[in-house]
Image 1 (cartoon, helix red, strand yellow):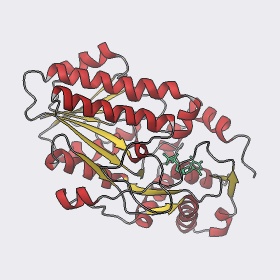
Image 2: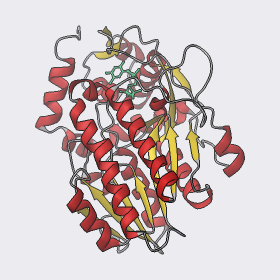
Image 3: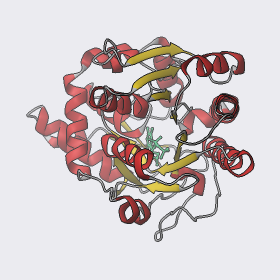
Length: 352
Ligand code: TYD
């Protein structure tokens, strides 16, 4: 089978490919990635020479390029990870999110509709989405597949739009789609703009750890390999036209997450936890900051038998250890664009 993976140099896509390409030599994988700031080919170094892996640099917002590559590869399955994903960036540069997440998804849907027009049987367009499309929760409750959409940030609104396009292509044209909405991913190879890698990298260099507001906002944390396995499960056994919510069953306040990182950093560097805890610095809150996300993953658990395999504490410790052991990867993402973001975003608000 030919499997097209978009955004395979990004965090979740790269972890998907690193896990699935060696496990499935019977399938041919093609990674389409625009190699924007968050995409790093170094994340795929260990699989790049495998005979069942190939790469093409394509920006999905360019319809002719997208169509040409999709037509040449003739995928049976498409797993659509490619997206701009960072809420803070979406607040500063919303246009990038419209282009990548909405126009990019539309172009990919149209390419698939064209090349699969002879038959949809055996084909899958798997759209990887987020729980942020559902808006925010108060202290109680959880999102499920039937929660009404209520996105709040430019990022979540763009992902909500793409989910609606995917469902419309199924409903209108019969395109064989599956959708997954996941909670906050963490793990190796995550670009240091999201909470966990920002804190790990700043902790490593003993810089202030910038916690927004009071650190009371709550996220559900999903270890990336558990997410990747859930996607494969849905690909193999999920039903066409269905949506599956994927969560890690690990709700934590941001402050709890940062304290956990301090604990792991201290253990792994044989030093005192206090010296890291003292770095915690409360900074200006994110505009429109969603209070809480949580997922009720009973559908995927009951229908497909998937559940997370690691606890948050295990996964977090493994993640911190990975960053400690991979300075080469960290250096490779610290480009001019990265430094510019860190300086403009955190530069003024952080008290050391
Ligand atoms: P993030 O990793 O950006 O994911 P999302 O906003 O999509 O959930 O942020 C996770 C939480 O951590 C969110 O409540 C915002 C908060 N946060 C901080 O407190 N400080 C930071 O430097 C970052 C990046 C996030």
